[in-house]
Length: 351
Image 1 (cartoon, rainbow, N blue to C red):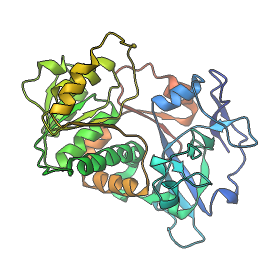
Image 2: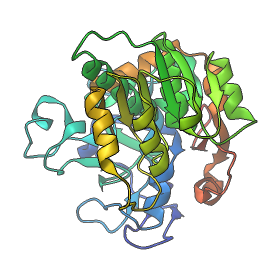
Image 3: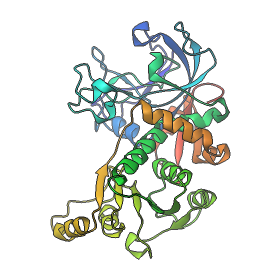
């Protein structure tokens, strides 16, 4: 079968192979036909040999951690042929650490977890793949190809769950949310903010085009420019750019008792000259909380599926700005389309 692969540690080793082996039953009893995979910066960083780890005994890694597939067979009877599913990316370490032992593998303490398409486990960018039924999330069939957004939505669902839990340290009645960045994570964070009934504000660089339109359709207010120019203090900030200046500015802007969630791992320079005492003082005197969030466990995947099921399918479909057939895999992973939000590589009809 065909699969998109790299050799981890070898820059620009991306290739489409025609003779990849069928997935062994040791991967799981449920056989899934690939419909699509979403592409993000993580894939491009692996292609650039910044990280990535092949499964034991192999020098190649099948890419793809944002999946959408259709069940072909499940001898356990848990799923039915034709069910639309996505595969959970991270699997707990074999030791396991205390968190992995209770299903909180997204909070792994020893780093021995595996991740499909990223770390020591084959990804979903292959025509067929297998998993255990408890590693699959069934999707509303009405989502169709938008189901490929489940993985990034699971990351956002975890972020919001932790925001709620941290905010609950005291009386928690947030009204205003600020999301910085309008990539897939930023827009999905904005979607979940509106589903929580919060007044939504989104800040990004674009001043026109699809991204401001999508924010407006959520009922949010779109801003460009500096965070410091905003005329309000948000109760919640979901920071999705990873840009150092934006991170520092939101720490200065968040309201007292506010919560800042950092999801971006991005750009910027070391700034040894920053007077961190200013930020420490503001955070302490404001009783503010700042935390980082990445990955998700099964609970968050279920929350994400529920959130996508509640969303407007037309709005979700507009987030997917480019779809490429498998034969055009090189263009799909190129990443030079500056106007794209979500790029998807399609394997079969319905992706």
